[in-house]
Length: 234
Image (cartoon, rainbow, N blue to C red):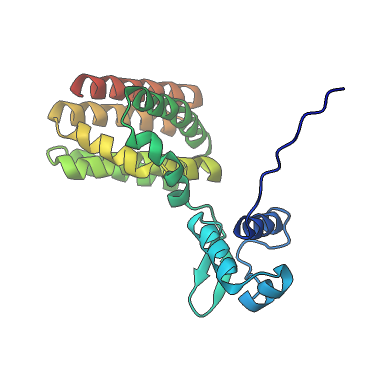
């Protein structure tokens, strides 16, 4: 058998510390909310300099894996950070390619239609009250593009929270700023605000009835219509 040379990737000390701490968290040795050993202890355990250790901790903090409190130490994050997830998508939105915009809305149609199905299945009376309040406020703000866009966004976020799936909610959360930009763009035209309000009322009606299947379908159609409108205005 012919042997091929295997190239071993060199790992820096900072990378090694980062990987070590990630493994400790992944395996449950360090639990969410738990404080990491002190810097001095970690230096002794890992045999690294203070500067190298701090660089690795800064990386983990930037990723949202740990949080660093001045004078208290470093702690394992208790929740995923939407901001760190959002950074992953930054190059895709920065390129402003038509294909990326199309893919973004296609992903929203798929994910949000499923999120609404879960919302319709799991919603409680208090959830319906919040959603109805948003709809009422939206109607009152129908002539205010900025306020309407804020409430449009809030309607979708409230549905995401009500769906009760932490991973889907965080995935939606990481797209917040990008979704807001498109909603504000659309809200500039009165006919778009009116159509959006009609669509939202229809979606809420399906959620109230716990009509899981149709809740997903009307949401998919709403987002598809939104994408077409944006394309026509670009």
